[in-house]
Length: 361
Ligand code: PMP
Image (cartoon, rainbow, N blue to C red; front, side):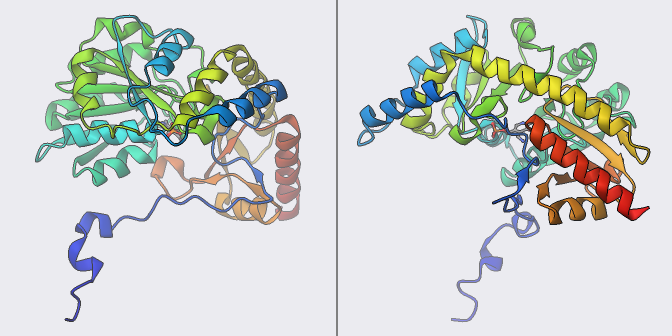
């Protein structure tokens, strides 16, 4: 039977056309590519976690509703009492749940460009049409373009990251709220980088019936746990709950997240150090002749540099892994993105960059 098992015959053409999300190997590298918090948890907390894992009933399925963890999250993140919470295996999974729920034939998912690439990819996974509205040259929201694209496409869902990845800036909050008001569908504000920004739309949730707010513990120092959450009205969350797989948040994630969230002071102190380091790294980068550094409210810095792809490769060759965005969008021509690491990692990155630049002139 020729070709009877040929995936090309079975898989949807738009999936065949995709490239998989690439996670480069990083063993032994200074890893500044994925917006992780570079600091481990304090040893006392790790000892507490070790005990939790000794006692965890891993022969049982986890609490499907994760009621206790949700309660802890509500207090730790100041989620308004009137709002319900949906948990995901990372916020990636929440994006997927929302997209699947909205995927009526012909439905559209909208975001800005450049934005977090998973918005576009997940739209494709879920069979939604993706509409990306370009940001302005300074990476601010093009409100007029957004409003006319909303009018034209009537998207079922809009995702806006606040601060935005990969550009690092916060959009104008009033412009975001105008988009919420103008949208015939739901607007998800993705606050993955909230710990590094001094702004949030959490307190607007009660004002807008079509606003949902997403957070993650990943950038706060718990990327390995995979825990994201969505706060929103129960009429949205109860529908999305139907799509969430019953045991999507494992028992170790529930136990560890709950224990660590009793010590948010530790995580927030680490975030503060990262913010201070971000300011230092920004000044260093901005001081280089061939570099334009963009101000950031997140735990990474986007910068433009001549011959970016060559610089990226030279850094990688010397053991420093950052993210190359050159060629991914016209606004990101010659742009690289570096995650803020420990002072030592940032120093190593900067010194290596400096050396590479002095060699190539
Ligand atoms: N949203 C944004 C804007 C991101 O940059 C990321 C991670 N790169 C995520 C969501 C996903 O985070 P996670 O799945 O780890 O919660």
